[in-house]
Image (tube, rainbow, N blue to C red; front, side, top):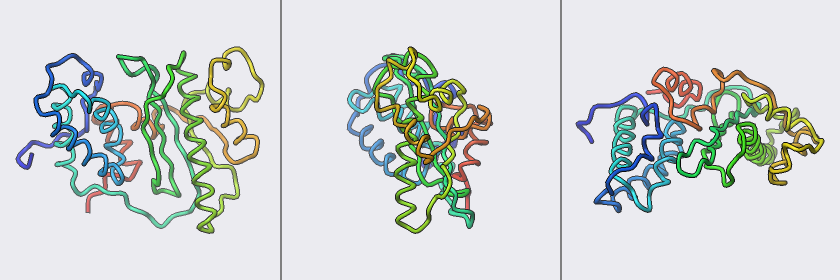
Length: 249
């Protein structure tokens, strides 16, 4: 790959092509080894987290199309070898962003949850995960994503308290789905929440105890969008810069 031509994004704009039928890849062990190495790289490269998560789903029986997507990801990494996460001197307020891509998996129609958290202007945690349950609506998918993000925020608040960096105000989580925000802030049970698992309502307790607060953000400003879908070049670059993950020395 040393002589390969770099690309600007980890995956094509339409990442659903990863799941399209193809012939089996003849060296599945190589595919697994490369994915294993990339999983370590995601510890300091949030910009490739979504791509690696997508490719990880095919480790058992990788197809040629999966390997082609993997090679594209390696070309992207080859063109951004100076990338890292700078820790800037900034305020120490914890902030989170939560997003979901509803029914994005073309095979089982399960949704993708993604979140990222900042201490001041520096990203300190992030996650991409396929939801375990099929969501009946985009609101339900976003609500489940918020619940996962709330759990991470509570853990981070406790960790920061151990480091004598207390968060004296509720931690703000930004979400671009107004219906999910309404569900999180409404403690009253009603029909459209009866299908959602009880543990997802944990977020309501966090709001009630003033550990978190959920606020709306416009989709174009939603940083967690980078963790739920493959994006076009311009959009990817904009969000990657907000993550401060593409700063070459």
